[in-house]
Image (cartoon, rainbow over all chains, first blue to last red; front, side):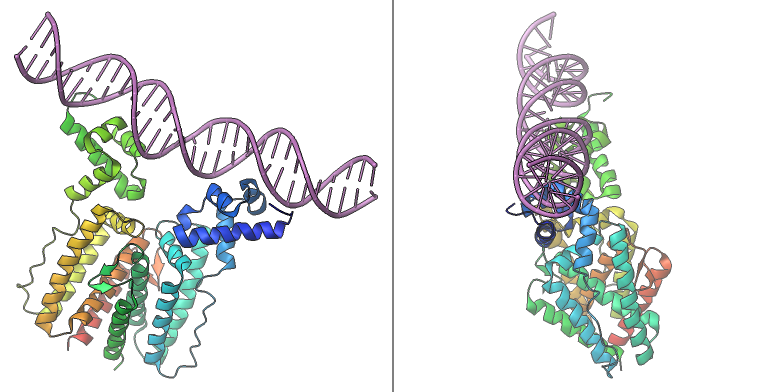
Length: 195
Length: 195
DNA sequence: CTTGTTTGTTACCGACAGGTTACATACTTT
DNA sequence: AAAGTATGTAACCTGTCGGTAACAAACAAG
């Protein structure tokens, strides 16, 4: 360490968490790994953050995934096109962000207060959109929730899987071409459903 | 160990793998864990199976997930009902089997020859069905593959997630009621698509 | 200048992981 | 009965994990 600067040290630690998360995932975030990746002795991790759990909580809080993306519902008068756009945004977000993929993957094997908090807020955001779409389209809310679940669920799954598997049902889930096919299917579905 | 019986010892080891997989998942299958769970010294694991990878390969080979479920395509003259039935079977299978859920979860974080082999065979089975449905229904094959991907992908995701999370888009993914709603949505979708 | 506090490093501890060596005991074969 | 082989265990080795103690250096306040 060159100078004595607590703020900078904390930044280094959090940055190290970021790179570990992006490359190896949350599962790999341990005291020793963060210490060596940040070039900071691990005692400081405990001193400044308390524990790895709290460090991860801070990391999640800093880059608050998903929550900051606001969907301006009113602006769309065409519910069908709005729906398509929402899922397009969802796909882009997940395909672009390694950290977000790792977060979704981590959630499948873990449960802790930080994750529970994220899920709650995500649930609220999602249900707000679903409610709005149901109201504006006249579709049954369970039906809208179901369709939304089918799409976001599979998109989440495929984006995680794509890091270890190139093809699923003949779709190249690693390339734009595969995802464009899936987008066409989603559009097709909405065209059939919203008559 | 009471008597000297290699067959019985191998059985004990494989059974221990099974219980560990079902309760904690493939990630937890290590030499020490299997040794203590089976009551067998770990040297024998190496002697009889070579390595943990090979032991897991044997375990996967023994209970070959997914592959043994044959779908008699010809028997259905109604393609729509056949499709619904396939996905119903898929959901039941995944919801009933903890080991299968753990396998799907493991696949999201790992890649090895055993998994690659499974994927290949699964891919072939799936594409056989998709081809048949496309031919018999007249739907574009990419469209059928897309729909199938949306459903199986989300079902896989939700079944894995349900072990750590009770609600997704207001659906109770831990209970039959939530899944029945989702089944209704799938049926609804097929009714709209197959006109 | 001296005293106390913040920031930092090194070195260590116990627990447990994967993996191997050396040895004991049973069974088979001649 | 004797020799060889298959089956089993205990003990150990190295490495890494999370976690802590002890100490060094910079800085602030009197």
